[in-house]
Image (cartoon, rainbow, N blue to C red; front, top):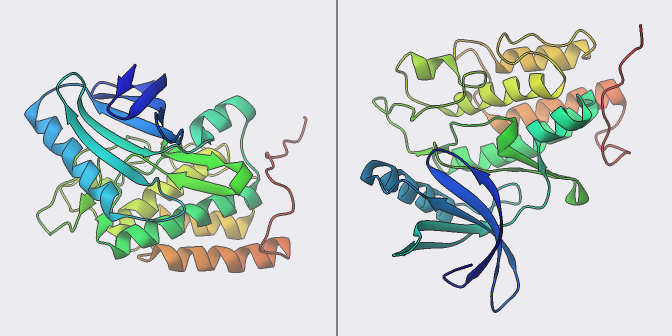
Length: 263
């Protein structure tokens, strides 16, 4: 099956509102991620168009690259992005188990740098969660995907479009506008999941290093203004923590799971 200039190779995801495929450009052979809006509902079509506009604005190594936006008679709305080879963090943890503290730290830092860039552009992602972070081990990178709930230049009257319960900051349910600290909260909850904790309750595993755990706790404070407000500042704090805990700021292993004691 072809969609415009792209050959569809296989479906990799499907939800209530859309489908996602792996494809490649028919002339250049470049792999691509193809996202399709499938409802035809004008409200969702408008949101999909906004998502395309957000993606077209951003350029960062830890974000997908925008390739094209199409509105086709046979397929409806299509967003074409770079294909990120790798596995999302939810699948990774569910298949292999919780992740080592040091490796959670570098994953967080890659994501925080992407968030810092987005926030500078006036964009709040609003849906940071394990399944929206793709781990690309070959490049030692983590890529933040899915801008479907993203908001550009929110005002005091802007409401979040939705979220995922375990990772959604409390201000979204209280009618407050999304702010950069909202993404930081969701990333903190993501870190808890990666370590094998409970993101619903915010329970951090007892074997997490105390100083690292305290950093995560500051990220998930219920009061959005009591959290860190600057993603890059959190990343710098993690660099200092890594130096103190591990004696280095670069990991030796490509990837490492959490060691569990046998009782």
